[in-house]
Length: 287
Picture (tube, rainbow, N blue to C red):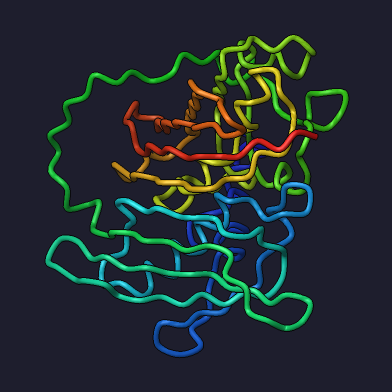
């Protein structure tokens, strides 16, 4: 192996020892209560990204529950989270042989020192490695141009609207067929497709899948509407532990009405497995 390639491979972050792991780590204060300092590195403008927040709560629940892998997790985003200290309170609802269910809420303090609930989550956890190998699906991986023919934020003449610190921590390469909005010619189809990974080379795991479903530019951009698109509710189903390598993410919106839209996401791993699915309801706030 050439020296440069060997150095690059050695420099790749590992699961458990990466910026994502450090920035989602929670500290046990007392049974069921965890502290965290939400990193400014995962912000969109000034608000903390919803997928990162879901991963933070997901990590707290993986420590609070006897099972470690999220199978299904639903979050309601109540108020916008800001970088800085936060506390997570968890509650074990039920434990079983194959599934455990818990809930968690993340709180911060306002300027008057009052506690404000930011997110509330209900989730069921299990062991992905214990699932049977039988797979029967009619779903097909999204059609994507080769990764070297796709484009990321660093390829544009100006920052992607609404992007900020989080783009430095992600490897996103958008398929050219969903990039019309960046060129002033949106397709109107409400689709985003991209190769996805973490910028430091860390491979995906079930917790980072919670980030992947909410990390691409909003599908509203390709519909032809640019504005802030905060998440109201997000449900993620994790179906399989992802294989090493870049992920393929496809997000589609079919109905924007009354100032709200849905986004249906699929995440596929390098082995061609559908590893996560999600649906979120988001609100469109025009710039």
